[in-house]
Image (cartoon, rainbow, N blue to C red):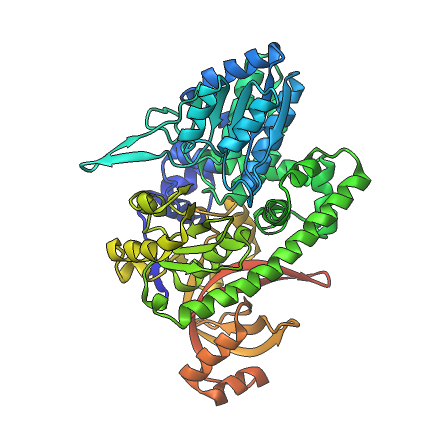
Length: 584
């Protein structure tokens, strides 16, 4: 069972409400998100693109800028090497489009997930060399390409690396030393010697910063750079970056731009997915997955073609293809997730603190999604491995208490290749090392049973009586919400539940009447596992009380709930509705 607690971070709430003209509810939510100093609050509420940091604060950014400008002027051939996820797709598209605009001789290569695996490899470098490429520019990869960078250097090629993944390191006597690839410029905010104030950018944002540096030196207008913000917003959300500081500014202003985008490929995705509005959810769970599906089941270059498309009919055709690919991906994911659960539940893996599952026949592109779902179900770090070409490949998804990148680093003698972040990583290893990896990770973990209990932080214990349209409208000031800036959640105890009905063809929507201790009644709605809800009510109160609930009779059912208030519009009528997130 999840552990609920009320976040009670202290601050001068009167000062915040008076200075920034917000309610105490908004003030408390911001403080709970770590936003309590005046400068931070101002940026949070009113930050603009002009508040973003100078790209030249990044180590080697000046070198990367000057190299690209020089190569463009000399008409030397530049090849962008990206990645096959949304972040890599967007990074590649933005750099390709921007460098074409300055007259560079540029093309791009996106590694094939199956044949090449993640990131640049020697074959990609050799092909570039044979094609007469002078300069390789990486995006969203390259920071761990130590051997590959050395190889390019030996061939006499120029290599510029832009990345945002954690920098590889050596650890001796508890002291970590970062190891950088041998390249002409290595731009990554996670470098220890990088003075850039904000570290948690996605790969596309680092690419955007390079474009900004190049365009500024060449005298381009600011809007020539900021037109790319809409694409960077998609990458930021889809790479699950925290929505704080610069990332918040990027997504907030990117969403405004996306609503009115002139990009024919994006507009085609809106059409085929029947999108009439746009928010963070749509970026992360509709637009992003369609772009991602190409890199999973086809070629990511198809998604770049869509973003580059200037013909409406062709854009609709490609967008339809991407949606169909994504629908196929969903079916395959469901099937393999169920297989994984069966393997875990029917073996001693269920007792492991780090779950390592080998799904031999699973498409390797689905490993990360399935690992994420396993993590959500058990609240444990999860690694899903599949059969690759002569090797085992996989993806990891972790929890806040466990830095998966560092733990893999300590097992690197078992691995062929790995890279990533504290919360997500990719790896490959010989089949004979799969069980060794599972055992070592579990034998050496410092995770406690307490670490494996998911925690739910409640912003405010807020009785329904305080909820109205004005409050709900003011909550819009907190948008865009997402990772580390989640929608606020409120709670109330001893809520009477009555007059419940189940809707939806899959019986996944429960609508009911909620009455609090003070007699305030509101409509409640719950999107979740209705069967699990019914079992819970039956176990706690009995089947007769469940029947009373569904038949509209008085019952003894009382729950504590975590909720978020919304406005429900139906047939021209607006009502305040309580969206139930958790119950007990």
